[in-house]
Amino acid sequence: MNTVYIALGTNIEPREDHLKEALRLLMAHSEITIEKVSSIYETAPVGYTDQADFLNMVVHVHTSDSPVELLDKCQEIEQQLGRKRGVRFGPRTIDLDILLYNHENSKTERLIIPHPRMHQRAFVLIPLYEIAPTILIQALGKNVKELVRELPETDIKDVRIWMQSGSVEE
Image: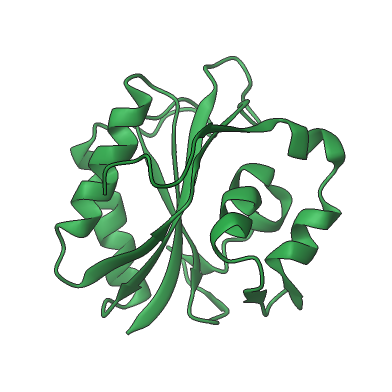
């Protein structure tokens, strides 16, 4: 089985429902087992800021899928939940990003592992830290705890717990 971490984000209401449904759709695939779910965090938008705040979380899964097979499933879930790709970093019903896949370091036209901007994003690193603080990001030579320490304090303060882990129906 492959060990994978996936980030989920949404800023179109009903935000909590979109996260729950994305988790349900992930679990509906027999090749995917959800092992751990972070708390849900609320964060201000990054990049395109004229939009609603996001709810973000990270899940740890085991899967027999290849990275591309998993990417296809994640994009299928985004489509099922009405994701429309328009403005880069713009509003979305749901976004599923593969952050880490085992300890792979790969780049294809469709997928870069580890996620190329994850180390700059408090809204990804803080939920990941909650469920896997010591996991090593080999491409960066640092673990998640070290990456969180390097984040600007203002970025960390902008990531607020919205719902504790265990409160989301799994």
